[in-house]
Length: 231
Image 1 (cartoon, rainbow, N blue to C red):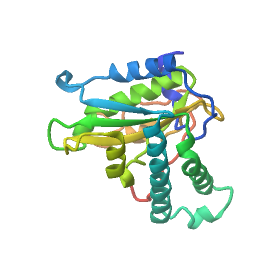
Image 2 (image 1 turned 90 degrees about the horizontal axis):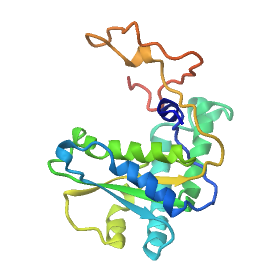
Image 3 (image 1 turned 135 degrees about the vertical axis):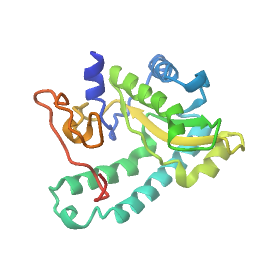
Image 4 (image 1 turned 120 degrees about the vertical axis):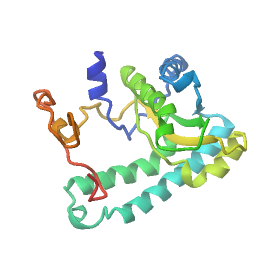
């Protein structure tokens, strides 16, 4: 698969077939993750793979509860049932149904991967550069092998219990940053839809148009998701 095609079709996958992921494929996916760039080559990222071991079973149950809790909070906060959300065929209502199904069955994904980071300095948005490239490499490698996944934060409501179950060090410098389910898609990959490049790319100054920033022919677009008011 062409690299650009892979990037352009690695969309969020939230429904999975029950087929297990062979260990050789897992090894290839995680190899790609560990090849990510790392400032000063610190390599502070760590990945915990949850399949069907005794700790994984407990962790999955906790993560499922966390997923449902966080989705319900987001549903209320972002008004998914208000406005166009009341129209069954609207994009907003379709997304709500997708998320409802996803959070109800999240814990059943063939593989769930927890991404962690040893923080060498105070946690910040900039420090995310020490882990998110590895997470994206993971998703791109999964796409190349026919799998799909999505980045979530479902670990947040149950982090303390999760860390205890998994035997993680009680060290504030070790942060759990993401929960990523993986599996064969129950559906299809891509294409990814985003806003037009002209709305996102500037040249030589803030909001100064870049004449060359033109999307390829046939590109489909979408508006930004909730909450309303973000730029």
